[in-house]
Length: 231
Length: 286
Image 1 (cartoon, chains in turn brown, green):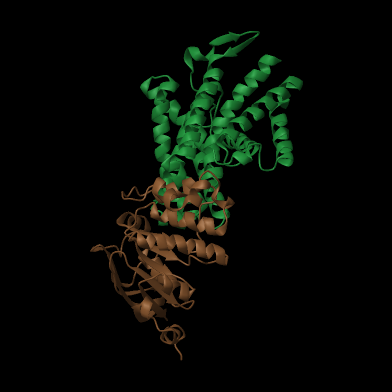
Image 2 (tube, rainbow over the protein chains, first blue to last red):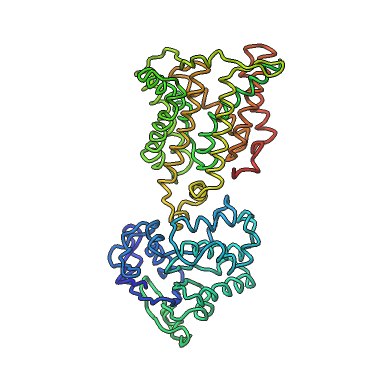
């Protein structure tokens, strides 16, 4: 579904990613974990077209998307739930969802389908997005990303700034999406949570992937070593 | 007296129309265009040239002038204003202020400092009697066209894919791009629309009054007052803001004929102090 090959990127003269390679099949969920500054956000920035790679390639369903603009990448089938939700405050909940469908990519995700899977969102459809709680806003942000009918969904820190109860609600919803067969890459600081909702994990440190494996068989000590670079 | 006030309200509809383009820039796109008034005057001069060359009535030239000004707005956004965005409040103000000065001098070179007007033909003197008052057909037509344009604009920006894209882009450009919105093109189209509306205002302005290259800043002032009185981002608020301004001016002329504009400005100041967010700020979306 999505392949990342020897990706190198950075900000101006500052290199951040040093040869990232990943491969994901349809319906897989990959947890991308790592400490702050490991390169997770930069990886997402390259995948979504906000930063152009210095070398390497990203292919989506066989097509190279490395040089595409963020707008073209959404049209090609990659969508993102940004960190901090980033809903549009002057738009209602429903308008936020409709903006997600701006690229007019056809598929199974429609307004009705999003409301069906997130009934809480349907309740507040006419309200300003700012009137919702953090957890409800996160559901809207996920629904908005789904409205573009993505082949691959990137989720950046779904639990950031949410109460434990809200995090539970968001991850129940996320689990439903997994059962729908969506291909997802998840960046999450809560490692236990990330492993519990993913098939595979990739641990990043200093701009490289230092450990990969099946989430179900993840060894905590091994991950700690990979995460911090020490025993 | 009633006739004066009604005529004031009708002039106010024109002020509202001046303000609508500015309201789109300032309230919805959240960028200032200090050259707004000069673009209105430029449109009027353009209409003067087109009507003179083709020998047609200004109203018939309106679609062509609006189309040309749409292209001008699109180009101004892509070539100048777009480059200043995201760098703080000052760069767009300075760049459009510079555009204003350039535009005034270009008009002075091309069209001289002479005062001009557009010939309204029979519409200029035509009037209709509504009960005890007589109202000019042209002012009435200005009101009808203004209300129509306000309705269409409110619909476009409140309930269409394009309108949502404009509002999303002004909220958060980076996230809007992540939603697949070509933000720069969306803003260029919105700016084009703002100047196309200003072109319509310019033709009514040219038929109802006189203009010369230096009258742009005064149009800008009326437009600004209408927008602020009505409430930033409120499309319909701008029309009401313009009408309040027109009514205030005409009420001023009832006291002393030369006092009209001053009373308009005073009402604006009082309004700004009493309701800093404008009268219709709560309806900021449409």
